[in-house]
Every structure is written in structure tokens, then in C-alpha cells.
Amino acid sequence: MYPHERSLVKQLDGKPFVIIGINSDDDRDELKKRITEENISWRSFWNGPEGTGGPISKRWNVKGWPTLYILDAEGVIHYKGHGGPEVDKTIEKLLNDMGHEVKLEKEDGEEGHE
Image (cartoon, rainbow, N blue to C red; front, side):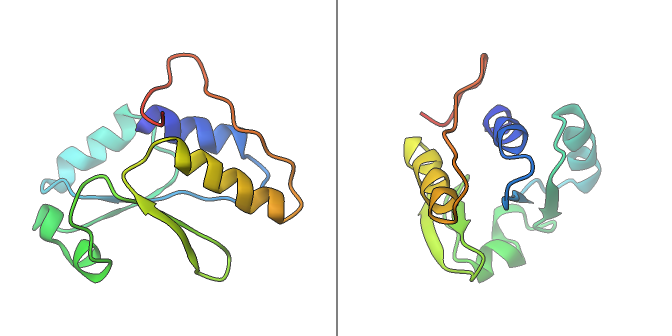
């Protein structure tokens, strides 16, 4: 999913959009290396040494990985799921409803959202 997330960050630069990642790797040092290797430029929180059973996933009732949430500025959840084309459609709709003309494009080499 990282290529798609990098594409979203690039395409939505300057728009009211952010990605916040929660990582379930149990080894924090390996996670830090992976963040650098994967060029993850967005905020990414560690779910703790319990991995998928950590405090963030417990609080948000995450049972499968990855799980994506799309929230608006008021904190209303507009999408919860495991990805697919509905993610981009939801992002486009929210931003367009806010007055931002957005049409997301799949970039070369990008996988994971369709």
C-alpha cells in the first residue's frame, strides 16, 4: 500500500488531507529502518511491542491489517475497510464536497488500491 499512499500524498499536496499510519511491527528498530526504506513521509505511530494487539488497534477495534479509516475534519468516519477503489472515491467525494476539485489518478508502478 505504500506506493498508493505516497501517490496520495503527492497528488493531494496543498489540499486538506493527511495520512496517519499505525504500524503493527513488533520490532521498533526494524520499523524505523522500514520507514526510511519505504520513504514514508507521513506521520506513523507504533502500535507497541504487542504488534496487532497493541493499544491503538484495541481502541479502534481493528481486527485485520491493513484497516483504513477515512475521517472528515469533524472526526466522522466515512470509510472503514481494507482498501480498494472505494478509498479513492471516498477521498475524492469528501474533498470535492469541500470545494476542492480532485480526481485521483493511478501512477505508474502503483498497486494496491484497485
